[in-house]
Length: 229
Image (tube, helix red, strand yellow):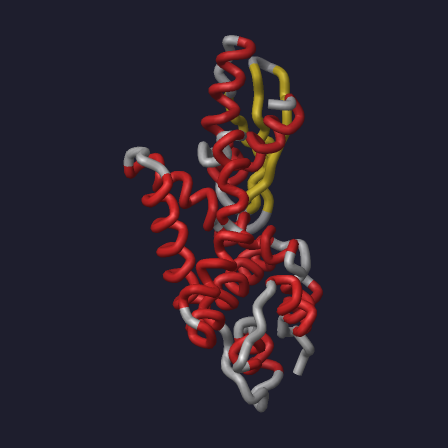
């Protein structure tokens, strides 16, 4: 078993049941290669942690902001989406405690890895809830998730990148961005699109994705960064 005491110190939480902490980081792929491993995978803990996370974030937003439901929903989505949770998992070095198959261990830069880390972050919350109850979970979520709310509000990160790029381009240049497919590769069931974000005829940035919409969002994010918007 891996020693996750360094992670416990980073998050300021000491588990009574170390098996629960370990199980939070067991990916299904690991068990395919190690069927005798004494613990199950983390999917049920992730299911529970997802609900705890959403409740704590929702409760905090409801108690502290009088905004309409639609705005609060967008703010919550920006706080608990897979990319945000994967980044938080990275900050906490959760990967040091992960149990992954050899293939998943090598595939460190893929989108699938992002989801694995996000799910492990939620599974950690689920394990914490079962082991220690709601209050440590609430404290953990406030410290490591809700602490990003101000930045999200100030930078309008709750607005999707395409909308932000369009608003900035129209306000700054009076131009509405357009998107064009530059290339697509792969078979029909596993295509990857490369899409460019244009202002007029000028290519500002390009992005890739497994759908045109995903590639457009990636291109818009990169265009925002390139323009400093």
